[in-house]
Every structure is written in C-alpha cells, then in structure tokens.
Length: 360
Image 1 (cartoon, rainbow, N blue to C red):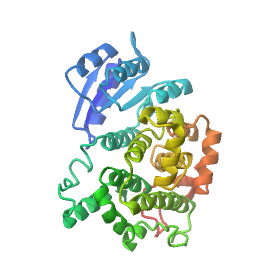
Image 2 (tube, rainbow, N blue to C red):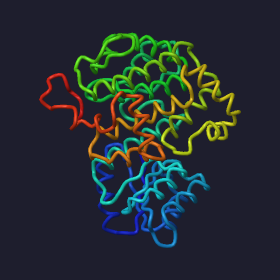
Image 3 (cartoon, rainbow, N blue to C red):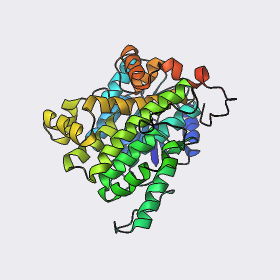
C-alpha cells in the first residue's frame, strides 16, 4: 500500500512517517507539509491511502480531501487532529473518511487504522481478490478444484486472529463469493467443516450451544460470528448474486462506518431505486438492510474495543458511524448481549484463563 502523509508540523510528519514505514502492508510513504504540495504529488503518483492533519494553513485537511475526491485521486482517507472535536469527525465521516486519529498518535492505534484502511482498499479493488503476498492467484479455470480450494483456505488464513476465523474473515469471504461466484460451492463446503466452525472456540446457531468458555466477550463475539456466518451461508447457497446485489454488497462493506449511509445514499451510489435495493438485500443476503449495516458496524466496534489503545466508547461510536454513544450502546447490546464496557477485555478476560487464546 502506498501512503501519502500530510502535516504542517515537520517533527510530527517525520515521526508518523517512521511508524508508517515500519508497517508491513505499507510499501511506500511520501510526505507533504501542506495541501497544495500534496495535490502536486498526486498529479504524478497514485496513493492508496491518504493520512492528513485537519488544521493546516491555507487549505485544511478536510478541504484537501474534498479536492482529492473531486479529482478522483484517492478514495481512502484517515484524518489526524490534536482537537477531539466531534464536528470535525462528523464532517470527516460525511466525506467518507475511514478513520479519525488524535494526536499524539499511538503506534498501535495507527497500526489498526492502517490495517483497516488497507483491507478497505483491497475490497474495493476488482483486481485483488487475495492478500497481496499471502494468497495465491485465483485460477482462471473455475473447474480447477484443488487450486480453488487452496485459494479459499489461504484467504481464510489471511483474515483470522489467534483464535481462528473471525466475523471479519466471514465478511471478506462474503465479498469474495460475490466477486467470484464459481467459488461459492467451495466456500459453502468449507462452512460445513466442523474444524472451521469451532477452530476459534466459537459456537454458532448451527450448534445450538454456548461457547466453551463462559466469558461475556467470547459470547458476544460468538453472536456476531454466528450472524455473519448465517448471511454468508445464505449468499453461498445460491451460487451467484445478481449484478445489483454485487454492487450493493461492495458499497456496504466499503462504507459501513459512514454516518450518512442510508437506503437513499446506497440507492444514489448504485443507481437503484431505494425500495428495490432494500428488497435485493432482504432476498439475496437473507437479512434486512439496516440489520446488515449494524452487523458490519458491530464487527468493526468489537475490533476497536478489544484492540489497544483503550478508546472511549464515544470515540468508538463515531468511528462506527453513530451520531451519539447512547444509540451505539443500545445497538451494541442488542447485537452482542453485553454493553461496550463489559466487552472490553480488561473487564472480562483473565490472561490466566486456560481457555482464552485471543488478543486481550
């Protein structure tokens, strides 16, 4: 991934650039100290991700993003600010900003933001259906069963954590099936594999049982995993999505945390009637539009809550596309059975627990 970093403070610029160059998924970093310089760089060089400070002279970071979007020079943005101002975050979200970081930048939070942005870029690229170095290329011949199966297994290994396949892994498989219908029967068979289902200690609706370790966080993760698995099974069962459904799925996965996401914005972006788009989601995904959006957001929320640094719930809510933390609180509990505070690992998981093998 190629990253353009824009910040008018030279020391901050150099420090963040060093952290970015240490990221394994970042192949090149270029820097600019103001907006016009960034635009000049983009005239001859394409960035996959742009990270920009908000408060800069002459042209602030949000104005820069607007210019870049109008010129179609990049689609993935992360904004940085020393000011924890909700209005900045709100305006950034309306521009499709992927993440919002506060100075001073924490290395682990930057890492999480970069990985998330890289995955977003990966999903939006029709040329990439696998991780750039870890997954073999998709065979041209869909009848090459062995290579197709190897491709799916490598895809699963790429998007998993220490406990096994995650809900995020299932979302990536859903996008893969939408893009490559010839893989649907292989994915469907893999989903019936008991080792795959329970590798991470996750119980699913298919099993009708609780997780093997009785902790709130594991139960919450299992509920999200089970729902993502149900949607993936539904999509895999028919073998192919309509062209409309493929456009809808790609848009939802890329814009799930955009606060402005609605049936109207989805319809406008995909060229479909809102009622028709809603019907497509219900029929072909097996879930209502808003419930699927909330599922995507809750998967994102659990990743933010369980990964250092310990972000305030209000900030997690903003990053996941919610207007206020109270609404986020209600949706999170409805989908996971626990509150965001109860989900945080330091409240629920003991490192001495012999059943727990995940990140805490």
